[in-house]
Image (cartoon, rainbow, N blue to C red; front, side, top):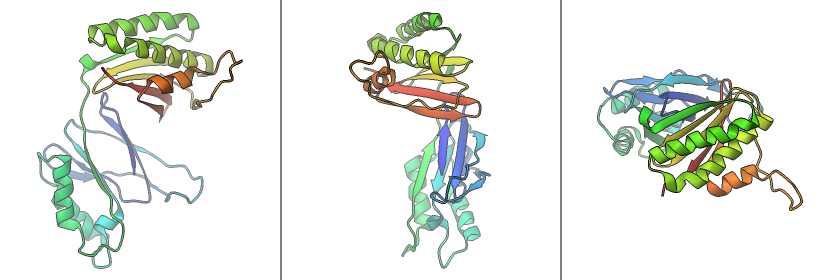
Length: 249
């Protein structure tokens, strides 16, 4: 099971590879098993995985689990799903409490299969902690957008992160203008870390490479990787997002 949650839009994109669908526990304690297309188990070839998207209310819980939790030699899968629903149907629990209650209710005394269980609670990043800009496909536009980002960081009191953010934003925008297709969009999020995102409509993923000492270019993503705590690519229905997470001093 694979899920990507966007705390700005509250949209969650999910796919599964053979395992049962995840459970959604709403803030009022109601439970729904999400309707995800059944993808093939991992390792069976190059078949594509279909995704499903859902909008999750703030404070919802997404519960992912393997079939060993709900099915064994003495229990049918439908019975296990109903037991799981009853164990989850309680509002106000933390992820740790959810896992404890589910394992107490469903864990066999002698499990015949490996069991994995994950519970995650959704949060929402408020509009006051997000800023975005549209970027023309023109290298001359980079400096203007960079200045706008720096002004926003100063407004948020993040001057100490400005140097790293300026370098990362410049490199990601320049790469998008040079190698991808428009429209290009920049977004910064102030959360436990500063997250810088640049999106475009190309599905081509950038690759980190090590430039030779005589190369004039090719060091952009290497610099991003050095300054960011984490970075990566997230694909969307109409392109991709390159993101970098910077530590907030």
